[in-house]
Length: 168
Image 1 (cartoon, rainbow, N blue to C red):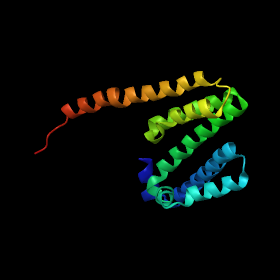
Image 2: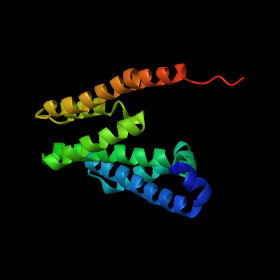
Image 3: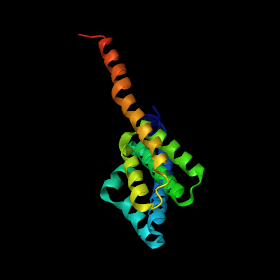
Image 4: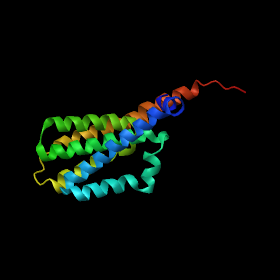
């Protein structure tokens, strides 16, 4: 288990990774807010406030939560790439966003409802509404995740329970 390796065998490396991932996370929040507001001062203040709130201090500054820090950063990158796709309509941005969302949803399902945010962006912020078809990809990934989580993984977990050995 990689988390046990960082916690018990190489604590210095884990703190370096934690600091590095937190800095990337702050940059992603800054860039996300800047893409929406176009104000560098507001983006800086908001990203610092985001990182220094009490709930984030526990999550992002504790080695145990290193995986949550990484997946949150990747979710933020997915959102940033989606906004860049809306602004510049380059296909590499949507591929990056879909790829990151696909990795993240199976890693940690905290961002399951991000496609609803994308739907909000497309319908209420982007006036052209040319990107509705792109949203189908995100909803298909979410549907496949639900299918995997509740059907396939459920079958695997119930089949392993019936084959367990009772030691008494």
